[in-house]
Length: 439
Image 1 (cartoon, helix red, strand yellow):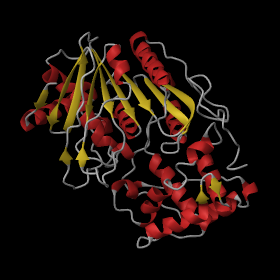
Image 2 (cartoon, rainbow, N blue to C red):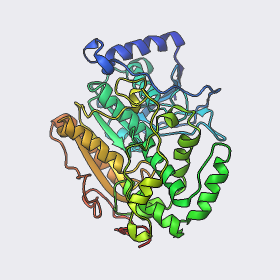
Image 3 (cartoon, rainbow, N blue to C red):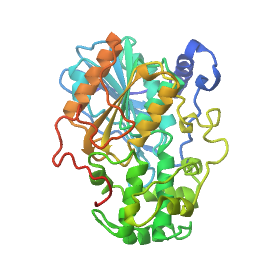
């Protein structure tokens, strides 16, 4: 397994090359000319290579570069095309919080068996850093010939999951010609932080517990007790479950099952943004424009809820299209290359409502032909079957090569029976749909 460490000077030169390559036309064109990422936290990051063996019939390259660690794998029967893989959020706290590791895409075997090379970066820091992840992952495209000794790829795809999906979508908007196609797997979007903000504020209003900076963890513990342990919700828990389902895209298959894992975890990020907005994403959170809905049969009216919730606006300038962080601005929808997105209906880590926001933006920009979205009837975050992943890869590649978009789902409107077309196999307990929490 070849291992290489690229010099700092070489990596810096590649950074400049990448920026020039990614700016359409090679010249500055407003906000599309570059990207200033949300900064890494100032911590002592440690690079640790996780052992990875090459697949049969492929050659694996691993090493370090200025952006972090990398893995690149090339099949012996390479088809001349490259997949850039962007991983999801790795917390910057906890036992492994300071350790940077490069991983492999979930569809690694499928890619190699189809003749695709792939490249993945650890990024230069952990945390919620889609912009930094985008820059570090794209850098590997230009480094690919130097790492492998192979020729420049004929086509390049960007695959990203969760936060990596956010990175992929930012790239498709900021540098619309940089890759030939994008697979956004359960992607986050800039609106994810607003969802958390809305949930945190709703938890306060529903439980009657107002969080404060000095007592935040104790406040969350008290809220947890007041809400009950899913699926054994208290009356207050059923109210918050209803609010989260309606905020996240409405009633849909496996919504309740997915919410069981996220009812309480979704509260903490929003409360942190409300009471102690130090990190950039906490400062950018907002629920100022949210109109809350709830099943009023649960004993609380939408009017009362909207009157009670604490409101938070983003710090001025941080969310604007021309502001400091492009990855935090709402997408303008001006995509110019194929994007295929995948989302499980019961995902409450990156909810389906984010797909709805993306569709509205792309439609408003008149670019519908470049976006195909698919829904899958399953609980949890990114819980796709191997068959579902392989089919999505094959369909995206056929679209890029042949020009005809594949079939997709409608993500707007009634989703109560969504996802039948592409879910393979159906999950145990399907359809798992209830109109309101516990009713």
